[in-house]
Image 1 (cartoon, each protein chain N blue to C red):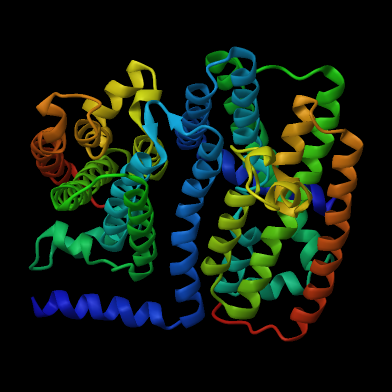
Image 2: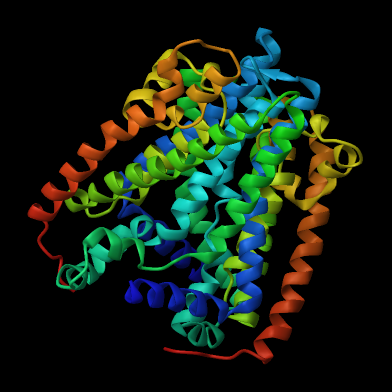
Length: 254
Length: 258
């Protein structure tokens, strides 16, 4: 019940700015469009170019439930306002509360950002629809991707609890996702060992792996094993770090 | 003048307070923007020409856009967050002070960590030069002039977009579409886009005039002199629009109160 209420609250908070978000969504589509045009200029050949356009646009939509989660999972804001003190005394843990709050936010993003961007892609750029079975596997992988992104963002939030300012850590996170997530360049173009290492890193697990599953280029089983591994490792790490940090938390302001 | 210097000094001290964060932000800001270029470089190892441009040529185009953007963000924090000034009513305070509004906006916060973007922009530019077989001092002159034009155009476009907030109050989402997306588009050769987008980047939000047209002229992809002077035409067009919209906006402005 708590979980549902938390998710709904985050969802409603977003709905208030619907029109602004619509403009922002068109802007986000345009980013995908730029990279689609780059690939079209590179690969004149139709079927290959079409595959890359699909890859880029699927990623641009999925970014809204992965890379673009609220920075630090709302924790930095709570630290600054001091309201994190209340989160400590609630009947659910800080991390669990955070997951559901961020999930509500991601659900909103999925419905009002990911879906429209994807549809714009289908309408204007000829994005291919997935095979039905791939679509199911993609949905599962996308949910896993959300969880991994949650943990990565949650670490940024924990950084804010420990060091008060989180923007540096968040920029570092964005840099890693941008470079190693594969949002517009798939692993095969990465140089040297990165080409082999990139698909196994948690960053690719949030963007590259789901998109490859969508296109039917990666076996869903393997993708889910890699994702499952990271969910376990990052989840455990987050749980242990939360326990340790809460003991030494400093409350400022209020 | 003294006021200006002390405001700049305060920003510096303020940001140095969180020392580790300050350096992290500066370094990762630069790296984050550079990562777009790294990715393009990865791809261009396999496909050396995109839209008729080589990696070195695109690096120089990218660099001109980046340095202009970095310089804008150092002084543009007040412009960038203009809707917050309006929403909180802090803009009223600026109106009664004995200094021009725009200089005050530019000194709201001098964002030193954006130096990271400037370093990054110049680094990509230096890489570009190393890839271009023959360049001379006159090309360096052109590069510097284009960077100056890039800074001016970045400021003008953002001042215009900020003034839109006099009518709409919120403008940050519009800025994502009308500036951040177009800025990214203009960092790659405009020849890869369909003509609609090219016109948009030339006549509506003239960011393609900053680097694409003059560079295309320099590298012999067009022989129209208009292309070489494109940024200055854009600046001449943007200044009256910018002044006009600010004048109208301030006349229309009624405080939101707090």
